[in-house]
Amino acid sequence: MFTNFKNLQNLYLQNTRTNRIEAEAFSVINNLNKLYLTNNYLEKISSNIFPVYNALHTLDLSHNLLNDLSEFDISMFPSIVFLNISHNRLEYLPENIMNKLKEENKFYLIADNNPWNCEHPGWVQHLTTIFIDAFCTNNNYDSRKVEEKMEKLSTGYLVYKDDTGIWSVCSAKCAFNHCLIWMFGAVWFGIILGNTCKIKRLLFTEPTRYEDKAIQCGKYKNISLT
Image 1 (spheres, rainbow, N blue to C red):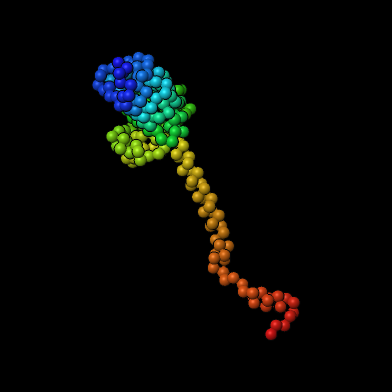
Image 2 (spheres, rainbow, N blue to C red):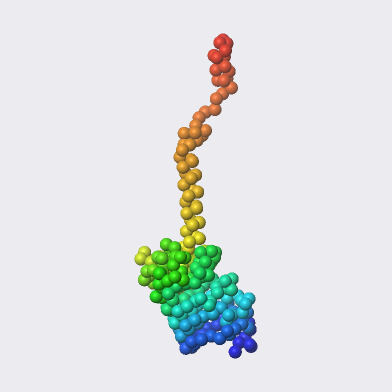
């Protein structure tokens, strides 16, 4: 089907009632950058439908019937930045997607409106406080606002709307980096505070003149100075 469209970059297959995609379906589209498979009947998605070396940036799988992502190896997509899996039937995320959220410098996952099961054995050991807040609550968000913010953010993000109206949640890596910054700053603040007197003397004490030193030496040696 795509043999004559090898240079295709953006592909929209929305509202097509697709329920299955065969292996290597997009294997000849090496330049595919954005793929939208929204509003279909997909129950599973496999990474083998794409070429081994691909340039995929955006993959939108929202509004389908996905119940399992175990066959989707996200490590095969080094260029992917935006993955939308909202409005499906997913109960957990596979480890490779969790790791990408924690480690990738720039990656956005849209994951609301799924029946997430935080006690599922497939990911319970990977859940952090941030993930629990995102997946184990009923928070929703407007994905259009997320797309507007994509280029303004620079680290791995879970995107959802919490009770305060925030549209993105920093990943574990980002939170850890912020902690290091605060710890480093606190240590230096403590050092400065503990040495306030010494710093004050260094900055505001008038240096001793040579004549004063001579007078002091004369006193200790009982030398009379005229």
